[in-house]
Length: 497
Ligand code: IFM
Image 1 (tube, rainbow, N blue to C red):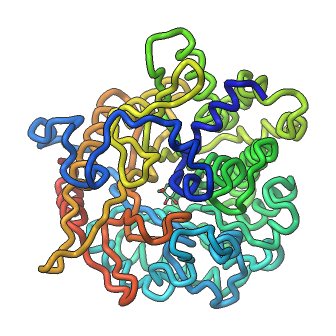
Image 2 (cartoon, rainbow, N blue to C red):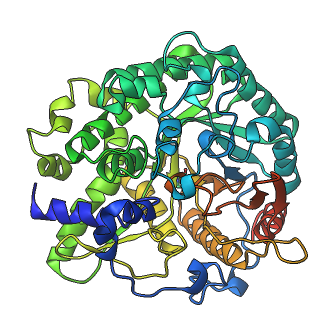
């Protein structure tokens, strides 16, 4: 492995989602290697000291008519009911029940108990005025062991959810895979096994046929990069491996699964739209040197082009393939015709934006902006503008939906019972303004989903990080609209800032 590759991978621990977990699982050196230019009390949750935009100037910004204001969640993070109605085990059940893996020993067994409280949560969504709700379908609820006849009780839950959304005038957006791979498939090799991609297409087909008439937008694989990096390189996400060569074979199989699911939708005759859900990180040189520019280019290959080029150009980026090398499991694992499947035409691209990355000449990274409670997240709203305009410039005018963007804050109800998350309001306002600038400059952005609707199980961080618009008091499961939720309701009502 080249020096650059090693350094790059080392730095990535500090940049990947939930990287704090890496520090806790013994990879602290990697996190320390990223230097913070500034730190902010409460991780940016006080009103941020440096604003990207002037709130006065943003006042009055209006979004296009019918803009899809929404919020997002995922199954394992909110549903709970881990053993009910025929649900099988997923890799996250196994992982979260393994001592030492999750902060405070938390698991998703109960989470926000959404499986039982979905009707109340639907009412909350209606009260917020949401126009779109992005959720994920739990594969082990539909196929306990990852294959075979679908479990009707699992399908019925999502049917009730989707019907409830329609009754409240909210458009459903369903993600097929948000990391909860059935454990039985993991036991057979997981995403290292090409067959898992075929199983995914079968599962997707079953879901399309059961719900397809009522779901206008499908997303295939959520953040394949996070599975690759956090699950297979750093090991602080399920399945908890540290094997870089395996990781990029996994990347290929996740991309293949995406393409096979797109084809399954077309073959099913179901009319919904479909696309991938990619967490994209704008990569910038940390300084003006040619070395930093070259290192940034390769970094961008691993962070963005690996996923975008294969889907929209039908080829993996040559610099990444060269860096992996001809003997890598990934390069050897790509078969004739795979890229054709992966690049099956999609109807939209789902973008998840949280943080920029600044790369130095030796492939290290530095921080230039305040970080949030999630130390991998630098708060930089202009990165949203940059990644949206770049995608449109480089990959054409495919319709875009933002399916995640948000901030964790140490939210606590005050004496009056209210949760005053002023920092989240500033954060969202600045990012909405950046998205608005992107629309003005020609990006076909059609909707925006805040991460997240509810506080939830934040993977390796357990319940410690709160990302929701709605506070969840876990012991009582009481929901409290935070200040950001009230503010967001007004944004939606005004269709702007
Ligand atoms: O909670 C996660 C989500 O599951 C995937 N995207 C990033 C979020 C915040 O870390």
